[in-house]
Length: 177
Length: 102
Image (cartoon, rainbow over all chains, first blue to last red; front, side):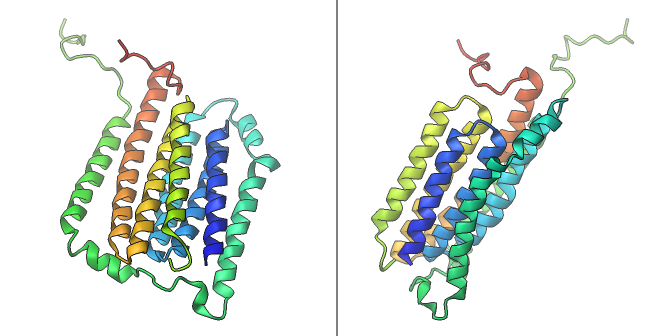
């Protein structure tokens, strides 16, 4: 089990190094997905399957998609087609593909083992996590709900495209004079 | 955790955190700084999960859930800010965005 942990954490560190040294944002995002997947396998090897599933669903599924969405929105121009052609070269996606294939091989080894000794002996199950989450941490869950609500309202307010930022005394009304 | 020391996991989390910190300090594009902040938050979550797995308590994963929700709220607001910055200043370089500087 520790071999799984060592391989996946090595992949996580390697892909993180690749994230902070890329020049194109899309290449960095590809390596970031690989880093999140490797950390998910690390969580699985630590005996936290609920955290592993949430890592894939929320981080690799939602946050990275938000990043990709914004990066694609920022690049609306005449050079977009040329840029996409540069982004989809072979060496751009070969590295992330190899690293994810190593992770896939790890997952296949875990799934195809006959004896369940490959899994860690003591697993903190989702039942324990949810009992603790809605038992002693219920106030914190409500506070997280407030935080997400303010996040939504703030993002909707900031992301709005305003026409001008003048104060209302400075604005001219042509129908008044 | 029987065959795996908690020190090893904490060292991995520390390496990831330092890599994210180096990314925040060295990159000038605001998107890369946001990515590095995500890496740092993820490393902190890894430390929490490792601690919860070490003591066989669910509190580590609960804290990881809170970090996850905080990261989601933070990244949505930050990306809205990035869109506004690009719309108003036509740049994403933090060296160019110095209007608030004395």
